[in-house]
Image 1 (cartoon, rainbow, N blue to C red):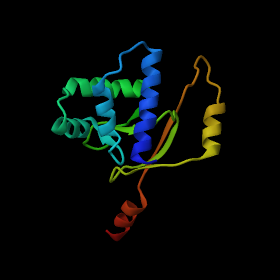
Image 2 (cartoon, helix red, strand yellow):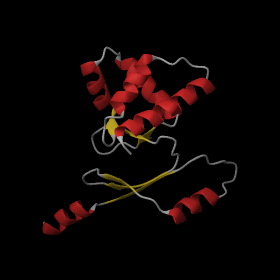
Image 3 (tube, rainbow, N blue to C red):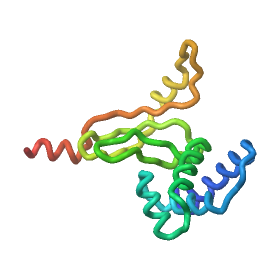
Length: 152
């Protein structure tokens, strides 16, 4: 998806969420979303803060509060922390479910689609629990890291 499309979709989701929860629309939220939509892949809160604070007069607390808001609005999702760095964010843009491979050596994350796995999880009945969404992380070694291992 193009950066402009990411931003437009994110703004639409944010406006919908704000109306549903009787919140105010602020220029800071749109500025933060615009900056976040420029990241090509996953990003940490520190990366977002560094990028935004270099160019805008927005407080760190405002950035953190809006990252949480964007997660609540299903614009962003928090990925599990890997290695020494903190948690990362990714755009979901309304997509609730995720399947991904995560390399335990280099930390590379690759999204994948598998209709059979998705159907299995969505059709699964849980006692005393109503599932809303799922994230499945498969940990192992990517092709590049496997190749490095063989050369040793």
